[in-house]
Length: 262
Image 1 (cartoon, rainbow, N blue to C red):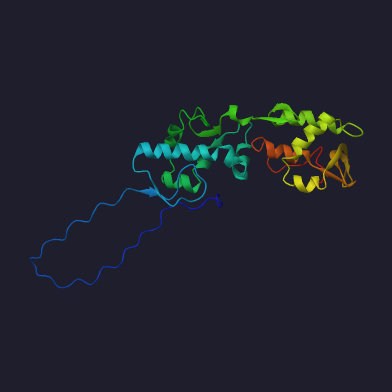
Image 2: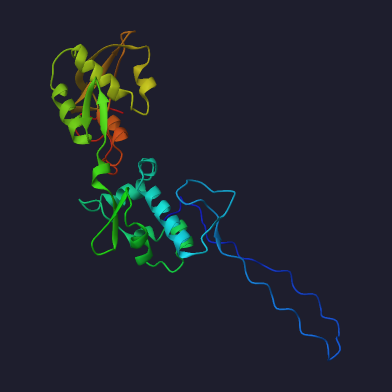
């Protein structure tokens, strides 16, 4: 299920086969007892992407709880969710964005921290977290709702959340002719978040207007009129989804009204 995450199960330890024992007199003393096994360690630093060169020890309950908290907060962090389509899809399954702990326990790093896949230690570790909230039944987790919406500045104005940006952009799509300077400032700032912004801008933007892409005549989109006279449309919704990855509908980036060709 979580193929993108590296396996953290400890590598099996193999010992060299014992050499054939030499004959010993009956009264030979018993062999010294084997040394105690070292404390268990995990081969990653909780809360950090990639593999660590220095294993982190989780040899007591307090350290284990701290490691669980840090790792789970990373899963729900914006830094991870921006690129983690699986987590965004799981969050989108309910309107309240809850993810079952049973799903979190399928991740390799969580298996390493809790081989028994117990839910209670996870719920207990997340108590008091400023990033993740635990459901009343102790079986689900979600990013704190207050953190789901962020504020962005576009065209000199502040917008809180994805819906506010979309609500401001849609009326502009219905305008005829070139957009006003203030409106162009908003569109240019929004365009800067497009994955192919430089390619779209090309020789430079002379003006911006609302129009249609020939492939999608029933939808409206923003069209860049370049300095060299060429025109290029773009999907403003792709820009919005890049700005608000936590609120973006999974698998629907750039679709719908105002989609353009890319």
